[in-house]
Length: 271
Length: 348
Image (cartoon, rainbow over all chains, first blue to last red; front, side):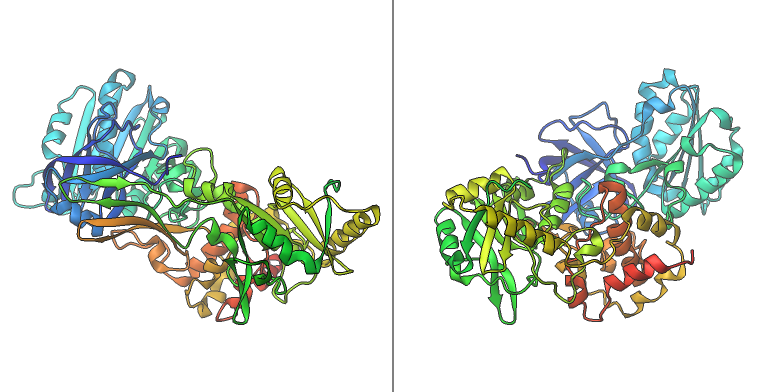
């Protein structure tokens, strides 16, 4: 019997800086690690521990995985110091991910805040694969300042894609910024939403998810077509350790992606 | 319960029987420790103390250790070597559990012995263990198993149940094939006469009806808890809670844990340690955000988890009424009182 807590070895192949406190890490697991978009992995830094991340790369590729990570704690602080060649560990994938089949035939509204665009990029790669099945894709992305935007070159490239609309906003602009200024929800009125045939996917910090959700619901968005990525302190990833409790759910197993109708009545949802 | 396998021994012969067991098994049993008892590996049958109703620590650490090495690693030579070496668990008998603790093991089974992500170290320990339970013929002051729908002769989770007969004899009944194997290996022939079987049935009946306290209605309690989550019900007990975690560590069903690395230079190990929802760090995000910032939220979580979420998920309250959290809480927070108050609470 193999322990569910035992990672496989993974080699760090490349590191790229996205913003002053966010980097993307290219990992090669010792054996292919297939995942569905929206599922997460536990990434080990030997000696420091492990932490959960959702890959930002295409789920079509199992041999190599990209993970975009903000410096936030002991594991991520060390990760940010590592160079290519470093030996790490991976286990997973865990959780349910995005149910693509339920999104087919719809207009897709994707809203990201800060480093929350990272898991959504994996979803976008999946959408590119399935683009025939979507009539329209809208990406609304916000960050604190222009320097905090991740994947800026890709954002430009995606905006040129057929069926794609990409709108970007920053909370505070700088001298060179000519785009929208304001929280990401200020971009909602700038796209013409056909709510009866739209699926929305939101990923970002808790406060951003809260206000995006409330605004979309107020506009008439169906609760069972609004997908949220819930964030909790996690440890085991396999529904046992008790950390990521969200009402009756374990976020690691029952989520991390939930439709709003499943969680809206949970007390302390946005805490 | 079929009684055709019933064995009877004089109580004074128990140490010899345990000695016989020791030739084939590791035996873990309650042994005296100052003024209390705890489960320890015994080397002789006369070390067992069955007088106190409950051991201080529950036996859960025998399946789910307080701290446990998951694997070791070395990080030198630009390589990480993982070793998954495990402790070898020889066949063992867990002797003298009380029915509440045996029942609690079946709850841990539901968490750890799952179809997917099976917790191998738990399962290895569990499979190696035969549980021999001693029915209670008296209740401790803090006992409340009947409130949780159980009783002092409950057989859930046991491979063998032992009942004390009034004439200083022990009636020993196997309940599972594991239990039957143990009685065969430890050479205890079937010996009960018809009057013995009658005495055994009577003793079980007496124990099962020793306490007529009305059980909680778990479904009703779970529904009520979801409606009073934001109410003033939670405004009081937390004020004296020290967040020491004693209740969760002594609880035979609490199973929260944390996974951490211990390393020095290039070698280290990944360990799994008991954790507690009573601690502020338990839910702290790396960002500094904490969804349960104050003790009120954490005490509420403990009650919600045991009496609401586990009913949703496993169809039973994760409390067996062993009373350890009641008797050892340094500030006398009494779960029995909380349950009474919950049943009576009319606000919302």
